[in-house]
Amino acid sequence: MRSIVLLMAFVVLAGSVEAQEARRRWEMERQIRLDKFEQILPKAMRENDIDMWIVAVKENHIDPLWRDLGRGYVTGIGYYVFTDRGSGRIERLALGPSGYLLAESGAYDRLAPASMLAELVRERDPKRIGVNMSDEIGPADGLSYTMYHHLQKTLGEPYASRLVSAERLVSDFRSRRVASEIVAFGEAAGIAIQLAERALSNEVITVGKTTLEDVAWWMQDRLLERALGSEFDMPSVYVTGPEGIVATSSNRLIQPGDVMMIDWGVQLMNFGTDIKRVAYVLRPGELTPPRSIQEAFDKAVAVRAAIKPALQPGRTAKETMAAMDEALRAAGYGVIEFNRPNADDKTDVAYGFHPVGNTGHGLGASMTTWQPFQSTLTLRRGQMFAFEYFAYSPIEEWGGRKLRVPIEDDAILMEDGVQFLHPANHRLLVIK
Image (cartoon, rainbow, N blue to C red; front, side, top):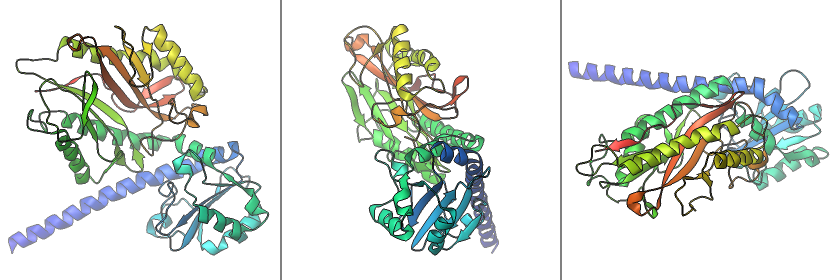
């Protein structure tokens, strides 16, 4: 009987702890939403000349911004409607979505039936109605083809002809950050680093017995234990050699002399991080990594100082990339295309400074070649991004072929330049 009572007490206590953590995370998301609706949304709508923003959702077919906007259960069709009525704030209506979390969020002036949409639009008479359609920005492309035509039919003319893309509004709304977002993202990034560095250690790895996929699955299990998500599906646990990447998250055994990397992100409270860490596996008799490997890592870390001054608010991403290239060349580095190092004794650099935030590859200005539209956007104070680059340095033991050392940490752009949201990578990890 005593054991049963103790077990029941444990279950109650465990349930209480879980409820406290769930509430903590919800309250943080709630605060972020309130701050963004009050401080970011008015600027985003007015600077992009949007009078009304309609985000449409269906049951079992939610918009990518569903969590940003407060969640809510949808039966049939629903709308989140934001209207600039000329005051200091934006009117916020939830038409159709309902439930405890939405009702308690404090985010909306009114919860009403979806059937009221046409009437409310006529009353407010917006000239430009933003909807989530975009050729390149995924989170701004949540409106399906059928829902677009449904909106046209529901609103009728002249409002059906006033629908425009809200892609720049969505980009500005998400990429401009409030203080509570920085706190939440920093927590997620800290967890990502802690788990990556544990994974690249003898806590997890027994050399000659542990495989790359064993390490990746260990990381996934740690996420499950803490009710977290993996931002890029399976963590990329890989080995790089003279010919490039040898294997990634496969059944390859980890061997002495391997140079290992982890590239992954953690999902927490509607945020997704993106970080990398690097380790060397000691050979028998080695107490430290070979000088050439350590020097290649140290040269990679040193690149950071050359690039940082080029990132300033007010420049477009393309202008920033030109400044970064100039700074790298002035510091003596080769500037190359990804994985195409020069055959010389220089350290070559390729970079991919993409935004982070609600997803590991986020919204805002992007200093990359694979986000062309976002490379036209302007860097703003408060934008979070991955400080990501690859440094290729020659290794004597490899006949001068170059080791690619990836460096990636999550940073934020402030008035005075780049600041990191967590301790930036500065040491080569060692596995015995």
